[in-house]
Amino acid sequence: MTLRTLAPDDKIGITISLNGRPVQVEVDTATTLLDLLRNHLALTGTKKGCDHGQCGACTVLIDGERMNSCLKLAVMMDGREITTIEGLAEGDELHPMQRAFIERDAFQCGYCTPGQICSAVALVEEGHAHSREQIRELMSGNICRCGAYPNIVDAIEDVMAERRGQFREAAE
Amino acid sequence: MNRFSYFRAESVEGALAALAADPGAKLIAGGTNLLDLMKYDVEQPSRLIDITQIEGLDTIGETTTGGIMIGALVSNTTIAYHPLISAGFPLLSSAILAGATPQLRNAATAGGNLNQRTRCYYFYDAALPCNKREPGSGCPAMEGVNRNHAILGASEQCIATHPSDMCVALAALGASVHVAGPEGQRTIAMADYHRLPNGSPERDTTLVAGEMVTGIELPAGAKRFAEHHSYLKLRDRLSYAFALVSVAASLQMDGRAIGDARLALGGVAHKPWRRTQAEEVLIGRPADDETFATAADVLLEGAHGREHNAFKIELAHRAIVRALSQAAAGTPQSQSDKRIA
Image 1 (tube, rainbow over the protein chains, first blue to last red):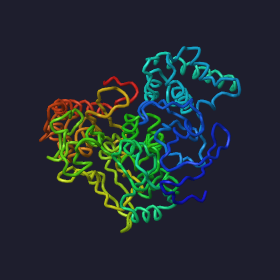
Image 2 (cartoon, rainbow over the protein chains, first blue to last red):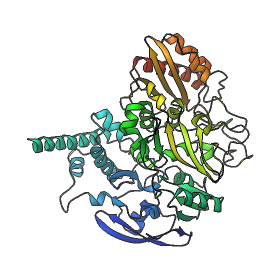
Image 3 (cartoon, one colour):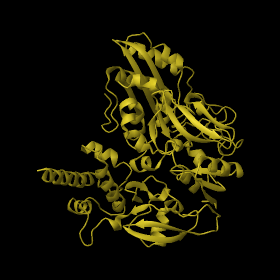
């Protein structure tokens, strides 16, 4: 990467790994990752809610960590691995968290759901939640104005239990 | 958002040179506060200097004197869950986990947490006067909605509070801030890093133009408080809300008496609020409510309330007593189960 200085009107090519595929795209300095995904790359699964890092609808995984894509500049994402809601399924096989959200009816209008699911996937990987209270606290960055919280926690508990079962099987 | 140019620094020296070349430039790392403020036109940098690619600022390690050095680019999440921090300085882990959300903590850095701006509503609204944003324009918070505002150390120009939880713990732990600038490197004691507003509320810290934070050092001696600590944060909503009052309490117990103490408040002033006199009255005394109330009296002496925040004086007094009793009992406040025991 040879980029050093970029003037306001300049555009610069960046390369990101997006849902497992390399993507080259030209951005200006003020484009956020969220706007890059939605407006430039037509990946509209990631939602714009508040655009200020308060609602969590724009949550994506950056190098595996959940972050608010509205508070990231695209130009600073060069070389990073981004996973959005569109990248969680394996072909037609939904991610276990997507399946659990459907089985538990963990949404109503669905607007916050892509962010909730990305956040929940990371929460399970992080391994810091061991109770419903801890799940609720560690999902505090995702607001659901329909109030589907109890079912969201149910869905996350299901996936955590499923994974514990898989670990046990693997150990036996 | 205003138009701005972008520069990617590859070294501290490169970042300092870029800062020196453009007085309107700002450093960016996690971006969680700066980009938010730019979207409101509160911050309008002519240039952003991206420091995230600088090597050597993203690690936590032990110093030769047994303390801990936290690089400026280490994320809030990494600090909170790092074994050296959670074992030796659990007060810091607890305070960080009391703030923001997992997404923000993953992005936000140590240096950015120190340098975040107040969340005063009037500071955030570029259509309104604000002495911090536009020196001399006035302070609508004085007679306006001031529930989240200062009860200690305020001035006639500004009653804003510093919003950080992490910094309250750093103040109690006696941390120091490592800084690089045009004149070389220097270290600033945490107590001197943030400042009271006085006549120049536009200045949050004692950093001078052209300087940048490179790290935060925790002194080895603060490990003696690891057994008896509590970070108690009281707020309008149990998660993801700024403190009305928070208390960082650290004790070293000597049997049933207090051997040593550190005490700092958040949400009440333009900086983490600490008075060594309040700690001195605890030393050698029995760890009971009477002792704790005496310390609270000293720490809150001179507190001044306004229309919507006068309740915080009594709230802070009770919170200090409660946090000190949690610390003495060795039962720190849980940041996930919010019941206050």
